[in-house]
Image (cartoon, rainbow, N blue to C red):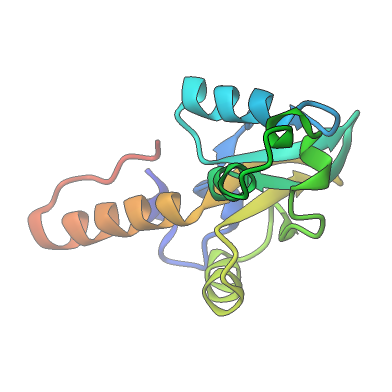
Length: 146
């Protein structure tokens, strides 16, 4: 349970989804679309080997499709993804990450450990964790980590 650490500032690693699925920068938007649906996720880190290139969201894919370009789904994800994703080290304070996400409108944060992708945290994750915290405060239901 992540709330046992509330006697001090929790770090992002406590609430992130570890070992996130990612997609190669040269994969197509069609590949990303299928992968997101199959995995039931809305964000994928975009990688070139071990290097983070960006992040692509379900919304990015839907926008590309909405333009009516019949070849859009054949484009590589690196042409559509957010090139400068929000990236933090795993020891970053959770409150700082949440404040930045709220102020910037980022829907996800990629979490690294020693510069390598270690996790992802999304606004959906934030809502889930907040609901767990509220439940634990008011009805004694222990919050779940995942």
